[in-house]
Image 1 (cartoon, rainbow, N blue to C red):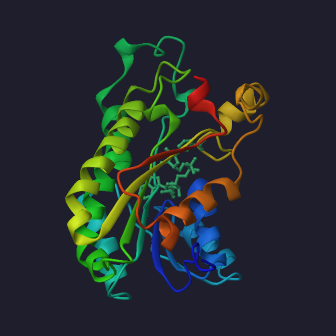
Image 2 (image 1 turned 90 degrees about the vertical axis):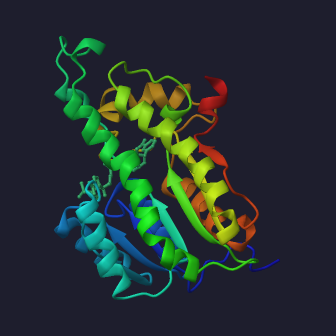
Length: 265
Ligand SMILES: NC(=O)c1ccc[n+]([C@@H]2O[C@H](COP(=O)([O-])OP(=O)(O)OC[C@H]3O[C@@H](n4cnc5c(N)ncnc54)[C@H](OP(=O)(O)O)[C@@H]3O)[C@@H](O)[C@H]2O)c1
């Protein structure tokens, strides 16, 4: 029972691990003894986060743009040159169009453009599928009947309930897609001893949520049943649970990590 939540010596990839929720999970994994690969487009941020987390254990940066199949291929090639097997894949990298890019006029369904749709879908949903597909050989190497390999997909409360903002058509669709794609993949990969689960965060203070927090952070925090925003340890511990021996018999699950927000709404 004492090793129920250990991930020591496991090999993990965390996409979008350079900052925000990905970096929160990365720190939790590194501090608990996993060898963690983080990836993001911006080389400097990726390298700086890997260097900062290396004081707690092993963290390696492999920068890549995962919104294209070419970028995914380059990342998988670089990872495979270093590791034969993969125990845990956290598909976290994501995009939401910043509010300040909408004018009063464009804050309407008629003005939601194809480029916004494609940019959001490419990283939030398409990348998740094709990265998982390309990493299957490594995940299968790490998978055993009693110790399955893990895929953890980061969706959002916005994939479960309509958001307050009326501009995020692609974001909500992509996150709803992540939750259902997770269920589909869970059934496809169970025979290969790979579990696939979703974490659906509520509001966490990150670059993505910066302007919401600046403008209405207090109001949001008060509206959450448990009275506060998410903290690094809230999301890191949920990811560690799904990645650990204790989470071995869950697949296809969507776990909101949101202080009760979805239940209230
Ligand atoms: N913050 C919240 O309150 C909240 C709530 C619910 C769900 N989420 C979800 O949690 C995840 C992380 O969000 P966050 O708030 O931490 O966002 P964030 O601070 O904006 O971080 C996003 C991360 O993804 C990387 N990324 C973006 N586009 C990429 C691409 N094309 N290829 C590779 N990496 C890319 C970014 O690095 P580069 O820009 O350098 O590429 C960064 O590391 C997202 O899926 C988001 O939808 C967040």
